[in-house]
Length: 230
Ligand SMILES: [Zn+2]
Image (tube, rainbow, N blue to C red; front, side, top):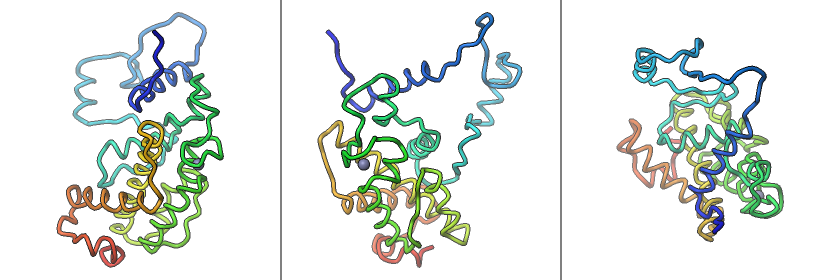
């Protein structure tokens, strides 16, 4: 019996598989095995060990994302996949022949659900960014693509510490927008932007307390006087 993927994990796996096929560029000549760990393409145990010990991650050159951040790896990977346009949005699924609907945004239903739309063009995320901006007392946010969001910590903040804190808040906000989108599709739950911002605040608070040097930070100070902490 044919079964359509129904959970986020299933759709995500299907997307990864189809992306592999979609991005494959056939070339002339015989097929051969090739190890991507170094330029020679030849695998040796020694090289593999060296690679693991250096903990090298293969980050494509077209991502300028900064990985030094207090959010967990799963959140950073989400941001990175958004940056390199590898999230299973409805527009990307449609391109790969998976059609759940006409490809319109799961949140506003008005535009094609691309990564750019979801994080910067959607009225829903607009309101979230405006609220996060006023919480962090930022200048108005003008983001037209994911890369603009990733540059924000650098342009809006002066000190290293401020940039470090804001970067994590931006990543947590993107994480929360993506989770909201998934909750709507796969669980049928909808939250208001103001509720999502509360989740951003509490999630970021939990992460920064456990994963940075700001362990003693107080919840009220975090919510009301974040700029004084910075
Ligand atoms: Zn939308």
